[in-house]
Image: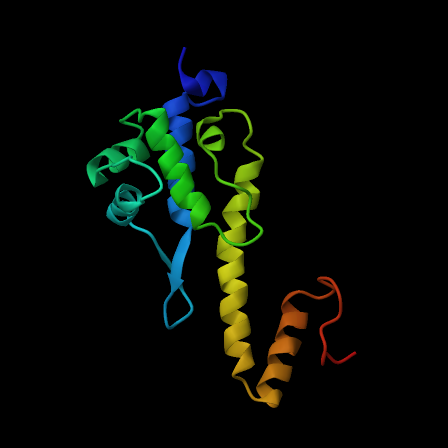
Length: 161
C-alpha cells in the first residue's frame, strides 16, 4: 500500500515536506530591494554543527538527503534541525519542534506557518519603502491599496471617502 493510496505520506516524506517548507519560508535577511534571502542547505548544516548548545553535527549532504526524503535522521538530528528553525522563526510564528517535523496528521499548521514569514517580510518591506515616501506619494499608495483591496478591513488613514 503506497502513500498516495492512503492519502498520507510516509513519515520520512512528511519530514522532507515540512523541512523543505521551513527552508522555503524561513528568512535569514532581506536584500536591498526588500526581497527575502533564505538559508541554504550548507548554511543550515554548518549552523547546526557549530551550535554549542548540543553535540550534534550534520553534513550538508546528509541534510540534503533528508530534504529529498532519502535519509532517515536520528531523533537527535531532527531535534537539532527543529531547534535551528525554531531559533530563526519570526515573532508570533508557531514553534518548530521535532514532534511537528515528524508528525503526519496535523497539516493545518503548515498554511499558517507558510504565510507568516513571507507575509511579514513583504509587509515590512512595503512599510520601509512607504516610510521614505513623501506625503503625496504615501497618499497615492493608500489610495492604490483601497482600489486593490476595497473594504479589506479598517479604513486606512488618509484614504478619501
